[in-house]
Length: 157
Image (cartoon, rainbow, N blue to C red; front, side, top):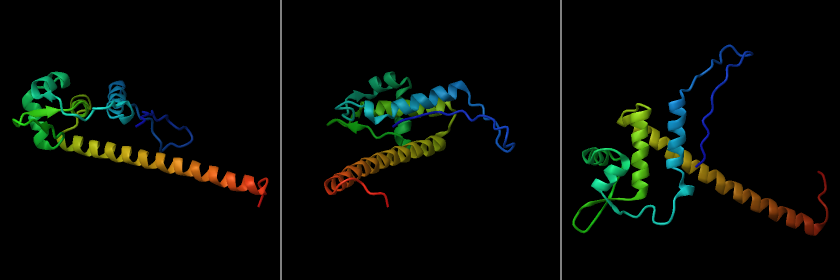
């Protein structure tokens, strides 16, 4: 997932377009969220459950009861051991850090977090879809050039 936070400049030719000042802490929070959710930096075993709740709470920087609360809200669904102990993956940790950033740094409530996470998931899905379409387009263009190259130079229509 790529992320760019843009600042809107005031357009003197269009009085309806007002300058929007985005606070620096919001820009940093958005960039951190994008980095946390960037699937290209995930290594193998990223989704393997391995951290017990006490370790996960230290890693995320919140209390264990808050992790259980986030689980009840549906923000995360940790794995379970044979003895029914919660086990969090690195992916869960990143996701929980994202939830913390949305709540603590950006001031969203739980409904806002659910909405923001759904939008970010949809954006990531659409980016994957666009990347797939782009690669198909490149393949088709190579195929078209190969067919035209065999028949002779391209002819303007």
